[in-house]
Every structure is written in structure tokens, then in C-alpha cells.
Length: 203
Image (cartoon, rainbow, N blue to C red; front, side, top):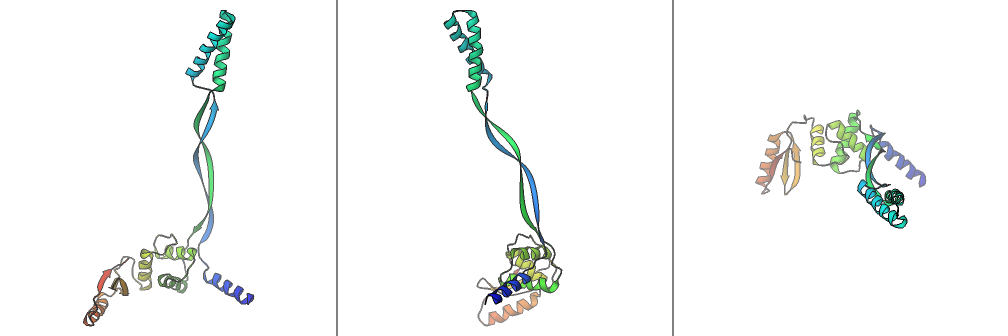
């Protein structure tokens, strides 16, 4: 049983083989950070020096004492005062990025596109390869624009060619580049009592 499961897993991986590849890409950014530094503003240092000078003169009653007190007071004010500044440092960030490539096997591409439009499970890498091949944004998410581009590709239409869709109760019944064929189906439905609408490049 284990051997069968392993073989099934291997077959699934082989069917999901993608054309693109993973690459490590790095970028460097300047990131801000806060740092606390010693040393106050000039007014704080001068204020400390004045206070120190007054204390020194009172204690020693001499001008020399005042000078010493001013120096000590200024030094203490400078030492105890702290300031927060914003600095920047270089930070390198590396990510493993998938780079899609064109699917050159036509049969494989058609199968992948059909699977995606049918809602079958397809890997993100394979989806991006398919999107890249048919010329839509390759984000790995199969949305309306990708589905429309796939329908045009499978119908051998140019990307800018119109694709007509017949819709009944918000459900797409059929899509075709032949507006006459779509119109005939609409008339047949109308005769059967079913109202429908024709949309161009329905997304």
C-alpha cells in the first residue's frame, strides 16, 4: 500500500513539473532605529555650570571655588543628560522568489489551461508559468482575466479578439468567438422560454 502511495505521489509531482525556477534575490534597505546617547543640549550644560558655580562659591566663598564648581556642574549635567536620536542602518533581506518561464510543450499548456479553467488543482508555480505563457499577470491566482485569456488561447484567438459568452441566470452556458453561433443558441433558448444574455469578454 505504501509503495502505491509513493508511486502516486511521484506521478503527481511529475505532472506538476514547472518550467520556471526559484532564485534567491536580495535587497538592501536603510532601516531607522532609535538610540539613546549621552550628552545634553548646550543650554542644559550651561545651566549645570551656573548651578555648579553658585554652589562652589557658596561652599568655598572664593572665586576659584566657583570656577571649579562650574566645571564640575557642567560635567555632571552633560553626563546625566540623555537624548534619543534616530539613526539608520543597512539591512539586507533575501527571499526565495519563483521566476516563471514559458511552457513550450503545447499539449501540456493546453491541459494546464483546461485544468485551471475547470477548477482542478494546479500548483502555484505551474499556474504562474501558464499565466506568463499566455501573457497575463503571473501572481499564481487564477482569476477572471486569466480565465478569459486562457479561453481565447484555447480557441486560437488573438488576445485582443472578442470572445462572446451566453449567460443564463448568471451562469455561462457557452463561449465562442463566433457571435452568430451564440446568437442562434440565444434564439433557440428564447423559443424554449429561457431568457439569456450575450456578453463580450466576460470577466
